[in-house]
Length: 204
Image (cartoon, rainbow, N blue to C red; front, side):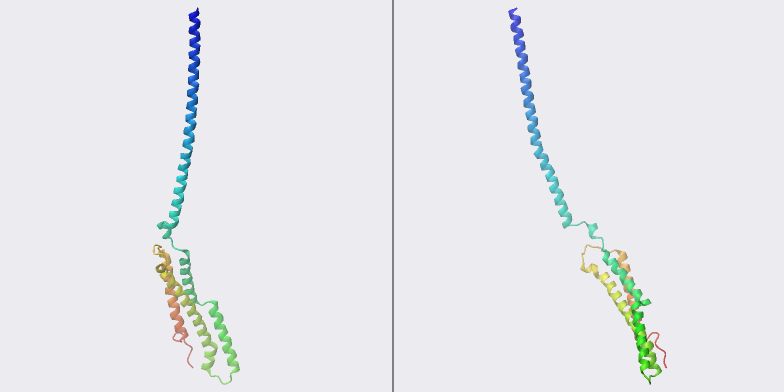
């Protein structure tokens, strides 16, 4: 009976020892997991920081060296200037309100001069009433044509003074050439009208 009591006591003591060992091991495992988590957290932060730094460096690189497609996009100002050149050339051919007003003013001025004059010849009257008005209209048409011609030429030569990597769109060149052509024609016609080589006054 005494031996049995000793065995049971020893068994109980061994079981308690094993439980204590397991609890100690569990505590050690928990401490090791916590240490690994604390160690892993700064590493994750460093990875995120490195990713943010890489993104910032990429953004700065893109700002300093923009893509080729962005450089190849022409400015809208050149296209607008080309269209303005064409419009000015058309105004020089068809006549604008500025030329009409200037012509009417010269006609009124000539009529007033003829009323004050007593011995004016027919040629003088035609020149004062109609000739000066015709020349005023031709002068303003030539001014519009010259401005349109200059604007068109400026659009064509603009790439030579800008970014060499920037490509001018073909339609901008076409519109600019149209403006130059129409402006040149208007300028020639204005010069012919002003010098009485085209549709001159009737001879008296």
